[in-house]
Length: 217
Ligand code: DX5
Ligand code: ZN
Image (cartoon, rainbow, N blue to C red; front, side, top):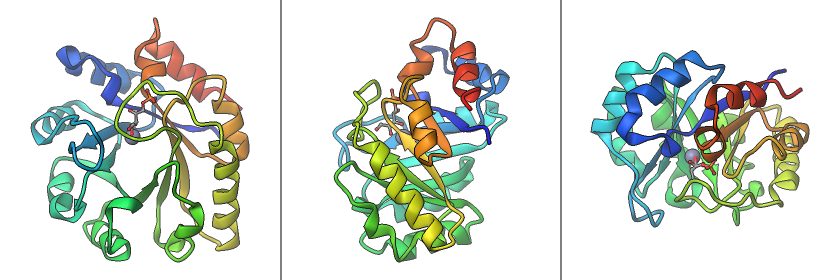
């Protein structure tokens, strides 16, 4: 099966956001990966609802929203209103993760959980059957263009095992430092979806770069 490719708009040129969204529309990308950071959960602030609204107006592909914010429950309805097709919250930011996941699903939005590099996937055991997506962070969240953490290969394989053991149907998305070298190994380990920010938008031909990622077998 071909991988799902989700370019991260965090690395787009915000002065030409409309152009970069059109580029993703025209590309073989599957999802728009949208990183929301609050300056509290992560040491960076990305963008908020007005920018999301601009993306919503132009995007012709599903919006895969990754919330790196504390108390995400406060804004779930609003993210749906601004076009989120899938919302992932961080396990480290949710005291009542099960309730948060149910709330996302009750809105008719796909529900995901993101886990930081230090967080064990065993913590997902009792919720894996409820999820549409798990995002494995392969960098510490907060910034684009960071170095891939090698331990992610093994972690991906362990998560895949957990999914199969529980007869769950959730997808595995890898987020951070993904490139054409590590992507084949991640897919082999069990990943279904790959986020790529810097690797796509800093390349001389983002369209071709997306096609190259999509063509990995
Ligand atoms: C990091 C974000 C990522 C980031 C990926 O906190 O969650 O989605 O944009 O960017 P690259 O691919 O440049 O590591
Ligand atoms: Zn992300």
